[in-house]
Length: 288
Ligand SMILES: [Zn+2]
View (cartoon, rainbow, N blue to C red):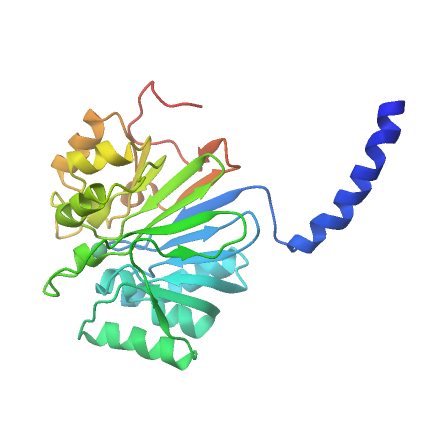
């Protein structure tokens, strides 16, 4: 009985304190690898109810991304990240910018002259926003997760902007996620050489599983348990390549694919990590 009386003030206190965190707060972080065909679009909802969008798929996927976010009851987007100027990543972002209030936009400091990229820049401008530079060491000011860009580490040629990809490492409790855009082996090696802690439980595989990404050295640095490949059905690039799939299998990494499984949703309370579907390959090393 004594214990019960002792606990009462705490129960009372917590009932006052919790509403101040906002109505949408839960104890879990969710990462949605949205099925946008050939391209990337990732929506993250933190346990504190903050919304992050990494990329927005191709031009014709903008409406789908908006519909998906509405379905998830997104009211505004605290942080939008354009990993790099390729159309399968930034194409739909102008539509998202027109549909939601976006507070901050991050992108690497590399320009591009395509109409899709200009549309994105104009949409950012029309919202009265300025792009903040995504580069190694830049941290996002979020309430209960740590999110820091681990790439790009340096400048690259502007002929191919893949290595410029903004690479974000997000940590909630004991669980980490790495979002790699279309980063290729040169930038992967630069990240490893920069001696940052790249360890992550879940990696979004770079460049849709192209063989010019996901090197051995990078996998050894990240040491993921799960890999998510965002890729279109019967795409003309041959993504994901057998080379990358084999590399992941050799490392006993469990694979999810949006072309075969649709949208992949990861959920973590900071300790346990679960997915909405089972990996297409699995091994006995999975920690349940
Ligand atoms: Zn891409």
